[in-house]
Structures are given as C-alpha cells and as structure tokens.
Image 1 (cartoon, rainbow, N blue to C red):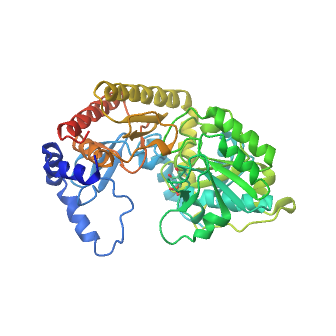
Image 2 (image 1 turned 135 degrees about the vertical axis):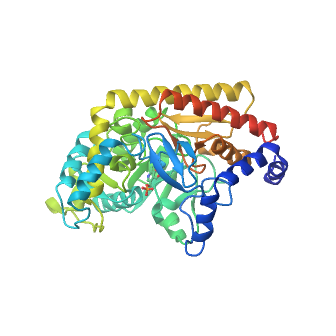
Image 3 (image 1 turned 180 degrees about the horizontal axis):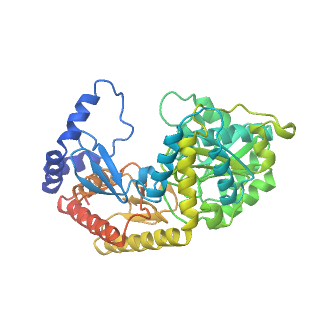
Length: 457
Ligand SMILES: Cc1ncc(COP(=O)(O)O)c(C=O)c1O
C-alpha cells in the first residue's frame, strides 16, 4: 500500500479518527502551550505523535508521566534512555537536593567528578581514564578527535544503520541505494559539507564480514572504527561473534575500536555491552544512564590513548573543554544513579531482561498469530516496534511500506495511555511493575487491532 492510500484510510478510518478526537479533547492545555510557543520556538526537539500539537509533560514519577492536562501515561520514553531506574528515583532526587544546597555550578573542579570517574573506571572493562562532557554527541566527537591525534591517521569508519549523535562526522550515513556489502556514504541533512563523507569517513556494512575487507584496504588511513554494540535502528543482542571478529581485524590493522555505549552503558548490564559480550575495545563512549537523567557524556579508554586529553607522557594533546563539563549537579546525579544500579545490579538487570524478553515474545506471538506485519526487536530493555514481517539482519531489511501504520500505532497507544516516542527506541525501566508490563501488552494488542479495523495492516 502506498503512503497516499494509507493516509486516505486514516482520514476515513473510524478508529483513527476516534483516537484523534479523544486525544484532542483531553489535551487542550498542550494545544494552548503549542500555539503560544510558535511565536519564538523554531522547532520542538521531538515531535513524537501525529497530533497538531505535542503532548507537553508536566511531571514524572516512577513508571509514569503526567501531561499538563493531568492525563497519566505509562512511560516508555525512558527519557530517551537515561531513566533505567524510572522517573524521579528517590536516590537521585536526594543527591540532587543535597548538591543544590551547596550550589550547582562552579566552573572550576569539584570533588564529585573524581568520584564518578572512579565509578566509570570500575564499571568499564576498557577504561583506565575518563573525561566528562555534556552529551553523547560531544563524547563521540571527542573520541574521533582523540583517535586521530593518537594514531596520526585521519579517517574514521562507522556502520550502516548507526547513530552516534548530531555532530558533522556522525551525520555521515549510508546511501540506501548503494550495494549492501559495499555501501557508499551520504550526508544526513543540509549544512554538512559532503567532503566530510567522501574524504574523512568510511561507511561499513553492519553484521557483514565484507566490513573487514574494507577496514583492511583502508588500514593505513583509518584511525578509528566506531560501533554501537546494539544499534538503535534494529536492537538485538546476537552480535557477539561479529563484534569479536571486528576487534580482531582492528587489532590486525592497528586501527582503534570504539564501542559507543551511550545507550547500552549501565543499561544492558551494569558494565554495558563490554560486560555482556566480554569485549574490551580501546575506547568507549558513555552518556544517558550514567548521568541519572542529567545531561552527560564521557569518553573512556586505555591510558596511553586518553593521554591525548592531558598531553601527559608526551602525547599530542587535543583541545577539549565545555563550560558545564563535569558540573557538580550532573556528577552528583550520576554518582547516585550508578551507585544504586551497582548495588542493585543483581535484581535490576535480570528483571529488565526477563520481563522485556517475555513481553517481546508475547507481542511477536500475537503478530504472527494475527498476521500483523510487525515485530518487536529488543536488546534487554531497549526495544523498537518494526513494521516489517520478515527476518531482519540489519536496518537495510526494514521496510518503509507500513510507515503510516507505524505512525498510527503510536497514536493508538497514546489513546490507551502508553507513551512511546515514535521516532526513537522505547525503554522499560526498573520502575515498571509486572502489572505495567501487562497493561502495555494489552495496549499493544488493542492498537494492532485498531490498525486492522481501519485496513492499515
Ligand atoms: C549510540 C549513541 N551515541 C550517541 C548518541 C548521542 O547522544 P546525545 O543525544 O546525548 O547527544 C546517542 C543518542 O541517542 C546514541 O544512541
């Protein structure tokens, strides 16, 4: 079905129109805020639902979000990843309150940065030293610069289907029409010079040994290979062999390997995918969960590589900084979150893995038994509903045919009081009870039924 046909079905669809009426009637404050905001705000950060206005959130607690009109939702946004412990966890709230009493931004160093760096070193298999910044984007940007400085080489490779943030190097993507095993690069969006893609970056096929040949061919120029151990675009945990083989090839070619654990760090396991897969790269980037919900990023790695940040031991030093990097409020939230996750790791991670796997199995059974052209892909508590019925080896296998159905699916879920940011991964947290899992399961099934009723699937 093409997009035009699908949009026509939405306009005529009894269920699609009913959920819109319901949501519009109960989100009048959100609509009002939107109309005021249009005067100055160029763009909302994320437009997560197909309504004339976003749903503005007023407060959050545990597994729930409440919007400005007082509607409560089961939160599957996870704050886009950080909230492994759910919203407003008391341990983090207490740490923030205590730090606010003492002041929240000093510019010059404060002790909490030392404490969190020790925690990260302890948690990350490859971390001798760490530096803090304010986002995952900054972390991968610094990692790229550090790798170039350390190796004296220029090119950096990333994979088809990857996401590493929004700096220019991370916006090098793959032309979907290029051959799968020999992909060619394409810049995402305007404003990034195409020379970045053609002269400074390489794109590699994901979960495909052809990547190893491309690395070998470019070894003399290649400083760094960066990879998400779980790609957001097709979350899965069956990548162990590929990652270990990649590590071997990088070693053979004297190319650094960066595991971008901005999402997976402190989420898949306390020790992230380094622990889950038993892999020790040369460098790692963190963000999200490590900051307990405050803006954070970090680069960690082997001591001789990390020396480029200080110029120690004769290393060629790179420029780094940031007004808010390592600020005491973020560090305090990070210490509280990581300490709690560490002390409760034997409960949190098995719970999230088992519950989410069981949820995925139920949804996938339902899709199979009711011929719904969708599947739930998950890596522990990270998940994505992919509207493609067949086997998915990489993001290349994801069909665009059911884009409208997917958009409508998130709207129906919202009507059943479950909120997922359509463009992003969804997350369960340790605050979601088995009862929440059950409610989400029902909401998913009812939303699929709504799509069927309107002829969208
Ligand atoms: C693997 C990965 N790297 C980097 C980033 C960028 O992080 P941030 O949004 O904090 O800049 C993200 C964000 O989703 C990510 O998933």
